[in-house]
Length: 591
Image (tube, rainbow, N blue to C red; front, side):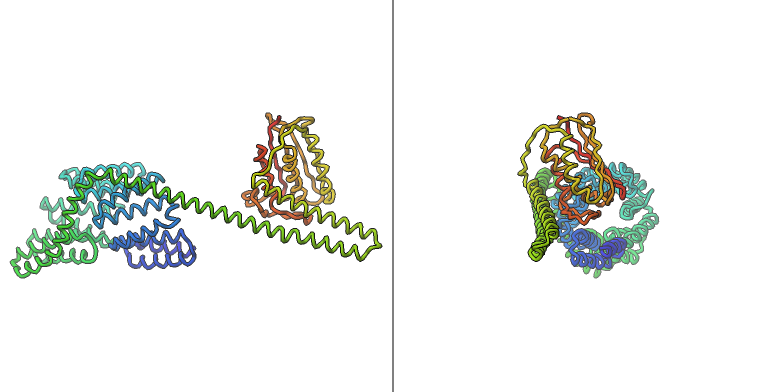
């Protein structure tokens, strides 16, 4: 498990700079997780593979792995991871120009992020929605989402998020034609450069603005910084845009060969991955350059390449116009679809939860059946064998009355042991099935305690244990089920005798406190460890302490006590000091 965690950590460190190598590492982590049937690390491996394919520009594979991660039980149970996956699917659909699907998943990601208060993801969701609206030229809408993202960044005081939001607001103002306001936000974004993608974006827009002003050297310098950041982090589109800007500055300076060189570098980046619309615009820049150079043959050749890109560019341009109309008229419809999908997911989650709950119950029943069979097989076998052996010996020693009396006592003792075990199991089953009926009556504490100590002394004297009666309740009466209440105290006192060392003391105390009677049974036994306390009242719990007189323990005594207290509306409290003793306190209302 540690190995898988280390692989994922190793891959995450190099994912942006060396995505292909990171992909190999994440794939190894996935294989390890599947071999070990570890659903958490399997989900995290799928998630990281999806992000890596996104960086590599393979959006279809990225969506596929995101969806696989979302469909896992761990992906469904971790709300923050689920929100991040939904955002990943949305972003990929936006890059594939599936704007309607992208918006739908952004809405789902927004809802999931708010539900689990994942503000970092919500900030990125609003950034993604702003980018989506920018692509279809709904720039006012885009600006509203960038302002939402800025509000989150300011509240969280996340410098990287703040830088990204400021850059995005600047981009929206630039698209809206307000270059002065755009410049202000770009420069503010670059004041604390901690987020490389935001830095590259801001440099891109500022370089264009410098170019438009005729400051070609400053524009070129900014483009160099932009390219350096993009190539280090595999931001393909903005690397290509940086090369295009450098080509344009060379063109304006009349350095056409240098311009062509930079344009070709941009095309080279976009041949495998990236936005085809950028490639289309660079091809047009190359044709303009050949035209200035008088290279008519090259122009003809380039027009052939441009034609191949033109269909794709035209389709995207038409799609953008269609999406503009759709988004204006269908946003509410998309929201309704999202709500319907959310309801379906909730129904599916409830069904899965019910299945898991049923499986848990079946496992508990299976474990209990095995425990019962183990007790019956082991703990009835030994006393039965002892009884049979005693009967055989008695048959052989017909004339030795003292020996026969000794064997008879052993038979009575072993029979009592079996009867006690069977009674415990019957009590447990009766409580579990809810078939116990209360028989309410008024009774005196004094009478009950006297009976309790008299019965317990039969076992206590054998171990030299002294039971002190420190009750001060006198003839005080309560109204409850006397038999069940006696059983609670008898179980606790029996446990104290069973686990206390020979020659120790046990103290029974009762006192009236604010309308309640407190019963205390305190011993000088081993006490309970922290681990014991966690499973104190569990069925068939095996605790660290061992009986001091080789007595038998089913692990049901305290479980029965707890359940009986609930039936009697009584409270139970434990005070324990390791290796010094324990005190159980039962609190019951006076009649």
